[in-house]
Length: 275
DNA sequence: ATGGCTCTGTCACAGAGA
Image (tube, rainbow, N blue to C red; front, side, top):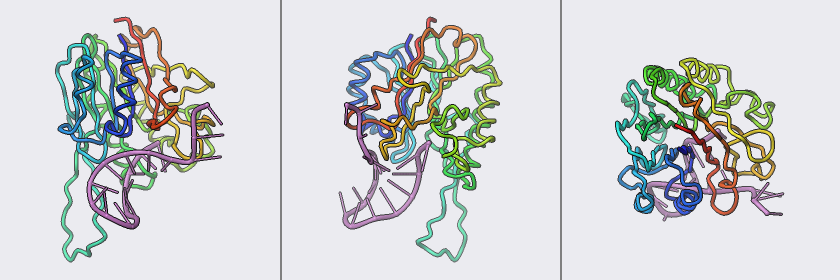
């Protein structure tokens, strides 16, 4: 069984590359993040033609996740129990005489499904923006709530994976130059501790082969030739419970998908399992 | 060569991404 995760940075902008990638790699399950389109607008025709069921969870301009599966797809969850919302900043364009409470929005950042023998969640963890931003507090709250929501499923005997764009580099080896990231999100102790507490429920970090260079980076900024210089980060992760981790036969970052015309800024992580 | 940002919504930029 082949499971993959890919932050596509817009599924509509990436559709030709996505279809090409499906045909070349034939995953049984592909998790997508940053689809940036509503469930209604999800371009699923060419995907379904290739034998995949599609679960799309989206809201339009931002965020959005999806699960494509050519195995049976059951017990779908859009979002998780207790998933925190984010309160968008007030519009400074209008000086309000009366403070109007703004509701927190539960964003399209998580979806779960049972795909054949595997229970699987895909996540797009909030970015955090900067350590002094409300978005950073939201990120930590979100990761803590995710841990509680997944606790019981991780402990089951059934193979379990949570995968996606975690927006955290687990160690300094997971960024191209730790000095560049001082005082930035993605590398703070609190973010790394939140990931460690998630793993402590019984998850192994399925560490992929990089295919080239030493570190299996999964993201490279579009700017300044950072991909050719391999100035990347490993932030797209596959966390597997013991049963699933024991079944892994191979894992790698498909950096070919980051090359050429019109790529995402993330590369897919591919995991093969013998379940 | 794998290359110097790109996406959406709206229509000249703003905001987000990490």
